[in-house]
Image (cartoon, rainbow, N blue to C red; front, side, top):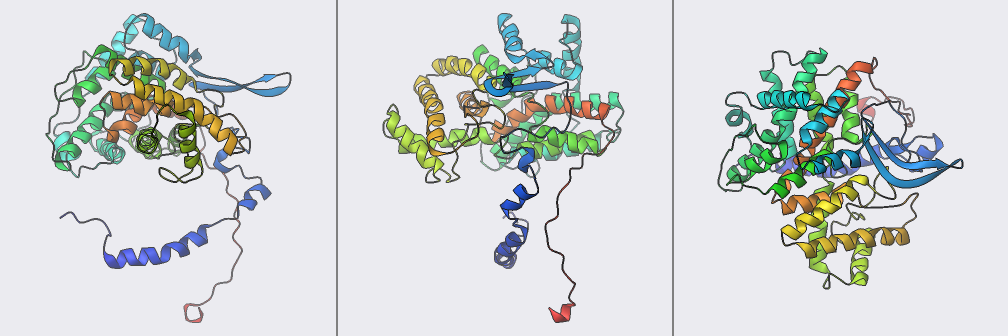
Length: 456
């Protein structure tokens, strides 16, 4: 029987007894944030982020200045100055896969020509191998259903196989980033297969990547027992990877990348830290919550086309009476966007096509209905400072379910894409930063006089 760390009755009783004491000592009066002008979450009361840096990598636009006033607008996303719609449109027009091309753009700053793209793909292929016995000695050891922890552990262990792990030479860091981009799919998928075999008692198989294929094709190839997938499935996954690849320097995991990089830490530690940030349900884990929420909706809503019944269910979520009782409608709202999330808008068209091909048109219609009703329900129930719309997580989990990707890999798929953005931001921080990122915190604890142990 596996022994769990610290899980003895005496330790559990101790921590349960003292947890309220520790919690009370950590509590801070919310009024003090207002008194001292502290912007919680590095955002002001209107949701505008505190400027903590400059970036050339991507840009998010959710409002525009009109007549001296800030007016919400349809969301826009730019990669290195290119509108994401134009990038996706160009790829679709040529009916090809685009992950590698957009990765080159984010890392190098410009769209590659044919020769540059071919060379880039070739380098990624050569780097796309794991050290000898790494799968046996690392991935297959201590398998866990938490794939993000498995990924982080594997990334940290890879440092042991790198003779220049700590070097911050720019070419060395670029090599490390490209190598991690290349092996992330293997680390994630193999980690899942190990868990599925050793913990879930299912079959175990390892498929090597085919370096003539795209990133999206290889993910599906390595994941499925028969290595088979349709062109539509791979193209939709490719679009998903591109849309998740980068989203400004202010999102939690990318900001983590900047913070850890600024301390002078190595690439492996930095990316592991970003992974740990992404795994949180408020960040990369939200798409799993959407799928679970929609499954719960199906259980509790009798007529899936009845708008009043669905609205009543959504209202129960907001009031903390349904699903996980957190008071949230998952997949709705974003820290920056208000009218629309351009990633969700782009994604929706592909979701429809995939749903029709997979015989899940009714599920798509239900998602569309919730997408329309949720903002109305939120607006009626809560006072909000800006509009609410579906974010990219609302549809991504649905897509992954149609691609037969297990829940355990939803956030790792996000990480397989986002490591490109993390890498670009790490390189940018190394190039421009000279100081460690260290924000200020206001101490509000009263000063006290020490009392000897015997007198307490």
